[in-house]
Length: 471
Image 1: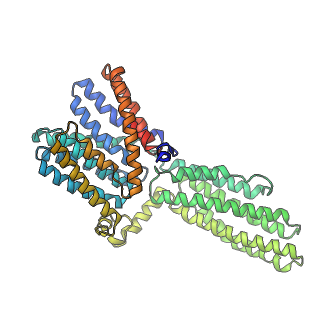
Image 2: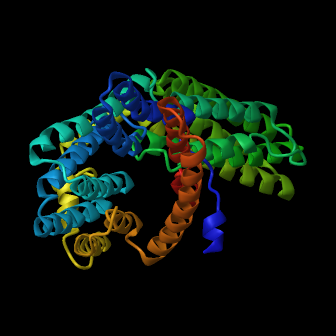
């Protein structure tokens, strides 16, 4: 457990994303304070806070749908909480049902699971406010408006050239591979482009990365680039070890054609187009490999023949990797995603990868981890609400709220996350107590602290959960 508390993961949330999320949370409250409508500003701030974690990369339409659903779920949960907040049995039943529904969303992925979690939290918090039922619609609308503000900032800040950092990083890597094919480094030298491959892997495999088709293609391309690099280095090594002047030019022609294909792929990745030129350049690649293969039969030297055989095998493998790069480069753009979505739309609803209702129906079974988690969430949330109302504990909504936050689909995740939550909360309470006594003079100071805490929470959630909960 101690290792879990101190374990630090790489930060994979870009700073620009955290900044725009923080702006959407803080600006409404600042406007509310300035205009004397603090309660309204706080409601909008709440909606923005509960929507910001759905700000994930991906196509415009997918991101818009995801964030709108999160904002709508937050508004409806607050509406339901205010409606049933004065009636404990109704609140317990609402907690049971929302816990079941929110828990089942883990079947759709971590983003959907977080939407379910925030809905449960807003139900509990809004019910504890005991607001008049007449204000329910207005408060829910303000919370939904906060989510809409996050949507607007997320779409406005999204680059006009989507996936530009990923495409440019892979294009640069391919140009370096083309340089390897032309320079043919010695085997005794450090393997070139190693750090570039590692950097591309880190960029594409972070938790902040989406599961969009283009991003999946980028990941495959990065792995294929590593395989191409190994094939190129192996061919270059064979080329330096051969003494036959006839076989070496054949290997060098294969390497030169590979360099041309890689440069054309890099250009296609840079401009976001189909790699038509690279595909055309692969037309004569097999002929070059076949010409190289002739030397393994014509050479009388056993050692030379063996090296040529190795070179032929490496050249054939290199050709396969280059063709795989071309195929995946076709999908590694927004245009490729649209084509994939059109192809997916022709499938029956149950066979589509993004078939939400079919996925949820398939998980309505006790053998499903998601369904068992949903049952635990619903029952535990209902019991926590009932206990809190029965004991009439001041600020007792923390009990069901923490229950919803800590529960995870697996025991290990629940235990470690619970430990992190407790540790982070205790440290956070200590810091908050000190700040309340030392640095809470004036609204401007409080808003500045909110900026700091919101930014830290957004950036550190994936780095270390205990550190994030301190904020």
